[in-house]
Length: 208
Image 1 (cartoon, one colour):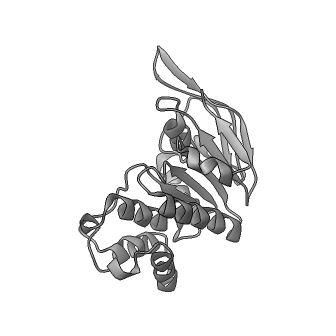
Image 2 (spheres, rainbow, N blue to C red):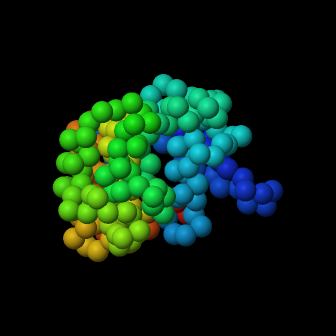
């Protein structure tokens, strides 16, 4: 479960973003819509503990994460949160397969068969030995989604996961995100301006 209350963030004295209160149960999905500059990415980064707010409350699985130290947040994030960034942030020196394995390694997970399954599902298995630089932008995005899901997080936060994908791969990626959230009773939040995703979500929030 994830909830926020009275949450805001200031980049400077003149610009303060205020966010709606949320209460999202496990096995639930929410689409956060908004144009560029509306604060979608900031909202997700606050909930991931990547940036800190001085105002408001963020609770994940009964933990008030805005009170965590940096090291506590890093450990909690690794064990509980799957992040899909707008830019892939892959390790280009490693192969496609090893990018997923290192994520499992740092979280003390030993499930290589899960890596193979995700690569099959996302159409990347035949490129598992290649380096990310040899992949297209869309393939890199699909790999970053696999990396976010490979440890079965209880919270999945995705920032524009379909922005660089065609209709076929957009459908595939959304189905995988929703299916994994349901399978592991995870909370899924997707921030996007991609109107194609609306039909897949009952719960939607629009940021001004």
